[in-house]
Image 1 (cartoon, one colour):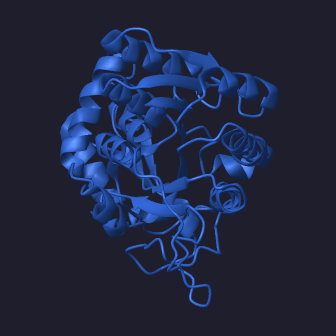
Image 2 (image 1 turned 180 degrees about the vertical axis):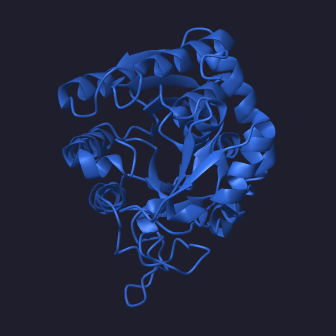
Image 3 (image 1 turned 180 degrees about the horizontal axis):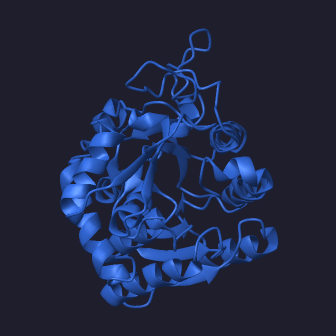
Length: 339
């Protein structure tokens, strides 16, 4: 297939690009290399991909650049678009909300316009488990109500789902939204807990555990995310003639649109997560217990039965195994600079 990946120098984007290139697909990447975190990590991810598969066509482009996006679509005419570009981070959305407007809303709208004007066979886009917000009943099901987001980041992701639905309904854009649950693994973002915690443990600095370490997170290893994506490529949604307007299922539609959870289905308390990292790093953490932070969801756990029914696959890598792979990469990449 001819595939465009946005956010291709990001964590999930680079892993996805590598897998698709290895599988023989024609892949073009897009990334704006912004400085939300050190762009050198993004450049190193691209180099890592190219070391294994050779040249990786990658455009330095922002989704907010509608003219540049139009030129790219006209040139490559993608069959499938995988949108992984976004302004990430729950807590950062409290500090810089406009970044989420520019990237997650305006940028996504530009991408939807391109998928309409240059019709694609399938648009797959990243949503987030954060959309479940104030929901307390777990495991989260894609049929659950998500009307109470707890952060602007979560609200922007729910908005993406609604925007995609409108384009599916009005223009027939086949769109699949994926609610990712706490993705981790080698080449992860430095603002996420694996690197933050590994840094703190390695450098004997206080490790901050919010909500006094009582959070539960449904950690999902990166290879399981990529496998799910790959299996969805040739399975675009169709209009559901049995969709009931009087009792609507929020995860499907009379339009060619649907939602899936991708999660490990094994929620772990953060205290136990830290203990696993301590064992793998061979050092004890100095833990600082702090109260719940604004925007944080208490617990996450995914019901992935809908995804498994369609693809025959569900996340399989247990946390201890995934964290072992992460720690091996962490030690290799930072080469002792953070120890």
